[in-house]
Amino acid sequence: MKEIGLYIHVPFCRGKCAYCDFVSYPYSPEAAERYLKALEREIRLWSEWFGPKLVLKTVYVGGGTPTCLPPEALARLMSVPRAGFTMLPDAEVAVEANPGTLDEEKLAVLAAAGVNRLSIGMQGTADRLLRVLGRAHTAGEARQAFKAARAAGFTNINLDLIYGIPGQSAGDWTETLAEAAALGPEHVSAYSLEIHSETPLGQAAAAGEVAVCSEETVREMYLKAIDFLTASGYVHYEIANFALPGRESRHNRLYWEGGEYLGLGPGAHSYLDGHRWANTANPGEYCATVARGELPVAEAVRLTPADAMAEAMFLGLRLTAGVSAARFQARFGCSPEAVYGPAIARLAAQGLLIEEDGYIRLTRDALPVANVVFAAFV
Ligand code: SF4
Image 1 (cartoon, rainbow, N blue to C red):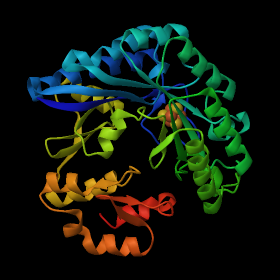
Image 2 (image 1 turned 120 degrees about the vertical axis):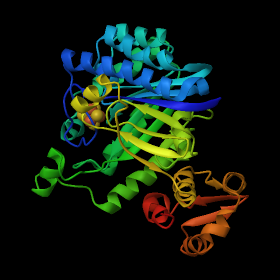
Image 3 (image 1 turned 90 degrees about the vertical axis):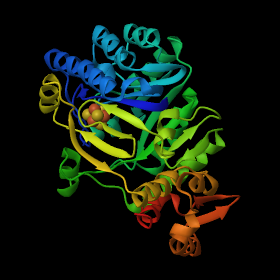
Image 4 (image 1 turned 90 degrees about the horizontal axis):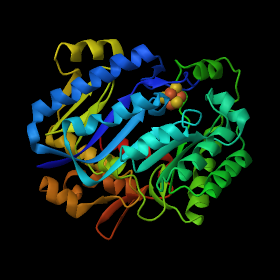
């Protein structure tokens, strides 16, 4: 028996946000029907492939916007995990939801399906900045979604927030943090906006039509999030994630700790039995491949021991607790020092890594430039 996480990608949204480079398309009932049929086939294919050896300890339904599906389709979606695998009775079952797509009926469907964690894409609390992002909802709708989720009995809610939005001031960001925290979510994710050149926002930035935040402003906003949220009682447990004690995302933790997971749906990634693979991201191709009874895998690699060790370092360092030297030793039969001694010493001398109590972790100075540290292990 192997306990794994299951990720399901729902590739639909109400519209396309100006910064979005995810696998997401406008929702239509016909496309959703084709997708659900394919998803139901895909889980059967995987369940035949792996047999009864896999048990689900976490389920994460993300996207896209899973809650843009109507209630009946949402119920069908949520029945997919159990159609293929056994789920542990205390499994974390999380669903991403966007404001403007959640109502009482859908919340009841999610609760009845055993969903015990909701992640709401609030992103901001100023309508003017939500418009820059091209979000299909207002700040009021985000607050309403949170309150409706609470009223429906959800006791484990994450709010996603974005900083570094063109035109956002330090004061705007402090206000967003305060307003989000005042709602009392169990978890907050604070992401720095990534502006991709091929997106409408990327093109507007290249044309000078929006005032992009400077690196220094973005760094200060990030440090503000850490200081504000930790002072508000949240534990800063991962680069971008904050939780009340005991409310960390179990599914995401599994990624950072090198746990195994199966991904379903277009563009979903998997890591199992020493292999990483990605499903085809094209929804038409995904549906057609699965309809032929074939697994929709577009690319797969077998990790070498060196790959697996590098991943253990750069994923593990995302956690503020850091990489446990004992755990690394137990997994690979050698210490991080034996493999990465010179890199660790150099980064420690630069004030970016610290070794303490059997853990190697990022310093506060390293948090805003974590990618520089990760590059040393690749
Ligand atoms: S809600 Fe998320 S996935 Fe959907 S368009 Fe916006 S950024 Fe993309």
